[in-house]
Length: 297
Image (tube, rainbow, N blue to C red; front, side, top):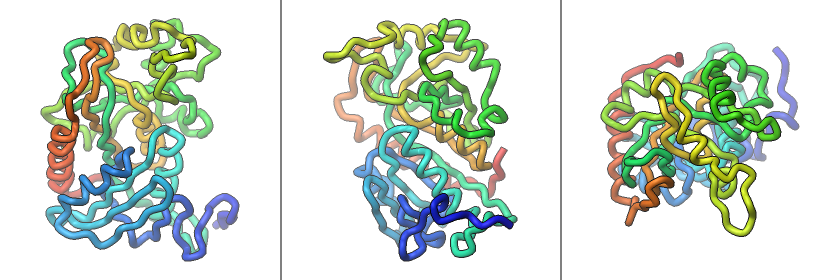
């Protein structure tokens, strides 16, 4: 079995994985990801007990127990580039022997649920509504650096999107990836479902104009108009497509739930999204703890 070089699998002096600063025994196989480091405590405050608190840069981890479920909450920071780091390092903690630097023969599938915020792209979606992402559409291009994206992306949705919107070839080629169906059924019931667009930035990549002009002045209108078998793009954020794509390629179960902070079409904004976020966190913890066992699809 090939040994992974130290330049490829980066470890700290104590043997912990480089960015997350975690040892394998310090993270649970059930993981809630949040973008905001300040949201880690909002989640772990509901744990029955906490046994690990570690941090490095914007990545904070609390690991404990909720309703007899071992669970970790980890902040990723913003963007698909950070998701690339976090997903690869979480996978390594479970599926690579860090001491021997060898890939394990037995694969461990993780349950990874992102809880965050986003902006609505369809009229009538009120602020504080929870959106469950049935699909992520990546506008960032990051996953094309991986060889297996072709195996997990929805090619028909991707080509329909490019065709319907006359997507400019100078921009990264979009890609559609689906949520894990088991997690979608177990956790997503009762929430609004839709396609989530994942942007590589917050301003022009999400149709915002301050001092600089945008390349696509009607980007949000273009996204709003897309339709695939009655599915619509409901919201904008910066992480889901990478989470779904890497999760599928690595054999993990992934799902995103986000609360709407603002509706970009109706020009409405949440007065305070913290109460609805608190409610969403409790709901996700309750539903995640009710899952007995699950294999990646």
